[in-house]
Length: 150
Length: 108
Image (tube, rainbow over all chains, first blue to last red; front, side):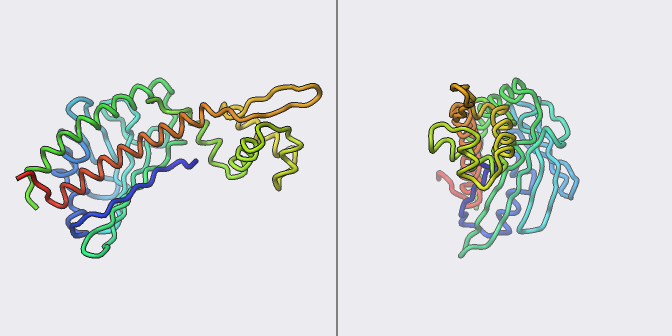
């Protein structure tokens, strides 16, 4: 069993378009967070994700290689209110984009679960909070996606 | 859903411990000596790894006569696998939402 999760999806849209959706605040604040986001798009810059029910989460950008690689650390198991992501409270999320046919293969790797050092109670409480948050967020996103033109 | 102890990940991160756990799961239970016979690892090293696995709650030990038998505890493994599956399914949800957005799918 590995300390990482790997997922990928084939999207029928250009790499440039997918790059914008994963790096621009306007979009991250809808499909990832549900109440907006702020993005300081530079290595070391912050992303602030805002959720209606769960406050804000701070992410720190680790890598920007437009349009093929984007990664940030985030602290999804931290108390809501947004501690600075650091070793021990955060995992690394890495997006990779590659052209495939007329579309884009987007893969994501989240790693570093073994180094989380919050107390088990904190992690359980926050994870349960996040799980509810995701369900809420996906509902919001479905509504948003229906409104955004291609 | 609860997050498993990080000790479980740390214990499983080592390929030798992973093989040790597999060997133990395959035979039900075993002693450090029998396990050392099945893997390219010395008996003292097997004992060291079993100690780490034991601290993570992944193996239990039982004294049988003059021998110490080790067996796999499956509960923390199952919990860890379920927790990871939960996070993976969150990503599936997010990526599906992103795909829908990128492809400009609309109701109307």
